[in-house]
Length: 241
Ligand code: SF4
Image (cartoon, rainbow, N blue to C red):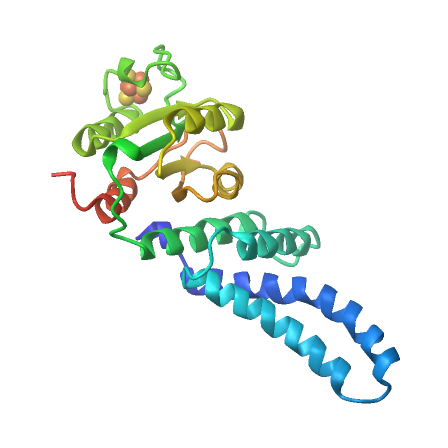
């Protein structure tokens, strides 16, 4: 499944982010303990224990053993800092959030989600700029002409019987989530919106699918509807027949 694209690299980067983050408390602890205990091995061992503790947190997050997304958030913030130094490429931190989140969400399958508590959430840039129909208030106004992916995605919505909404931005997406109150969101967006949205709606289970920039960002974007279908099949138990 491409929603889990390059998982090994993402796991490695996730743990790297946590390791770098944990250097800060370790480096604060080290001189304090050195001053208190002199030349004993306690300061060094304590510093290593802090680093190991954060790695353990990361492993527990990956195993779904702790609620929330604190380790993912900490790793993301650190990777953003590393990215600002041009040590990793643009959107890498965001893609790590999406992949790590998806791994966790899909590992829980089948988790007993119901279609009436499931929301397919899309960005308005998926709609063809040539389409004159306004869809943000009523997606069913779409005539499913095939010029953009919205028609296919509505077909999937019909097969699974989920909620379906098109957001015009982050605030609009938040309002839709508050209104529908889903327990599962399958969302399409760019790396930045998707990663921020995933962290924002915790603890709601979310599967993120990156849109494709065939014409650059935010303009006539595309998505492989099979990715959404595969996630829904996994989490809702094959309703799309
Ligand atoms: S599929 Fe729907 S939204 Fe897309 S161009 Fe056709 S009518 Fe418009």
